[in-house]
Image (cartoon, rainbow, N blue to C red; front, side, top):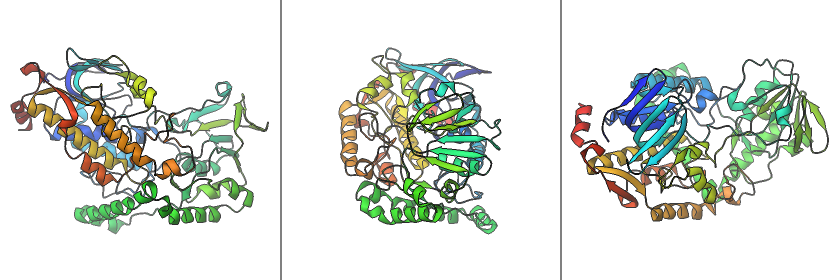
Length: 516
């Protein structure tokens, strides 16, 4: 692992780095900050976008906001006393990430406008050979922070390519399109859609909302933080830390209702149905939006204005399946044609078939996607994968949450990766790779625990499940258990190879010098 660094010449990169990080969202930024804290200065973060932020840079649709409390949706090491709301709007989250990146001093190691094309493991050289749109670089470790909500999923609808009006995905919002007075259709009723629909209802002439499955929608208990609260958080950080901790433990109490006994979620179900009854006056519409599965089986949503928007005179909820799209209309299976000017696709992301897996090839030359297609996404501790030495995932298989902040998972995984790198340095290891037995045991345990969760027994089909019917997205335990299990790098679960000579590993004394 020689320290010779990448050559960044404008948009071009070349050379070798110890650590190549993919993505500049929460995961990539956290990794960069913690690597530098450890004296790991020979790293590069590549990002296809023009700024940090990831999903919060890309999702700028009307009404975009977080459905996790602000106090949890920030790094534990970089609290933000200035959140304006208890649930943060998208611009504030993006501004927070920009500020943290700027103040941490890591932006000189970021290459923006640089997209990963391929990453191939070279077993002879014991490194990753990475092709990007800005050049070729080699790295000892490859750390993916691309995330699970980064690649929009487009629906396979007959004729959608023939539509003559404006069409765009919610994650690629076209702000140049004036929607005032237009006839608009929104496909999907997930987390993005229920934020978009109330905003569009205010300005469009008519809105059609196409629903496949009715979600549970809880009230959004949002409020503004007072000036006194913000001053208190700023002047007394311990108060904000205590507040965050209280919210954290409150969220962890949701876990048994998801993973042990779904009946424990009965109060939440009652609250969601009361929210529905309050927001919808039309009995027929109320029936259409009443979920037919157990709460928690699909993602639970929060909104105060989604149901009233659906109940408005200029909005129609359509539950008939879409048969096709024509040049100027959406046609449903019952033959009804509904003319539109603009089509908004809010159909989610690739979560069980991460596109980045197509670009990563391991020791045998096979892509990660090929391997995962055979039996579904799987890794060890959601972070490493057998057959792919020195590859680390952040927000990998079975790390998603249905109750709390993904930043908690990200920080736990970054801590595990840091321990792995320290172990490699301390023992002069050239490679680390989980054994097949360790990976199998980990995933067998996860799938065994999944059998009794509401995600498997709740009577729904969701984006949590892959084509094999396995839940490869969510973590079926508490976040504090995840943190505990990843608190140390368990080298006994790994096959390791020693560095062939002194140039294959960074000596410990070099690391000390970089910390000085």
